Length: 121
Image (cartoon, rainbow, N blue to C red; front, side, top):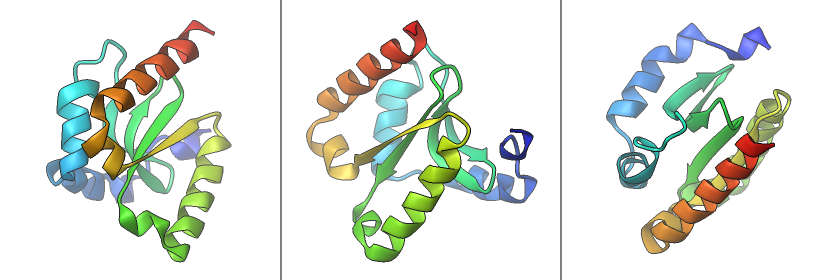
């Protein structure tokens, strides 16, 4: 499992992504995850990938998907990425950006319920 801990070649990219989060990532981070009682990291390096949000305690990765994620090439990439991360017992929740924009409270309630179930097991 140590190969997923830290890929130093991606650290600079992760730092840049933290500085340049999308509008939806900023909204989820500053309006929900940053102050959530269970610790989350944003733009976390896991192996060869940088995930949008990561919670070690819940073994959870949250990915926000813009429209590009629905193109064939991106679907294939995301499938490989998900398979890689799932090898480590992580669950990946993919949330379309339009859900963040149009149903933010519902997204937060869903995530809160999911996280509470994970940590109570």
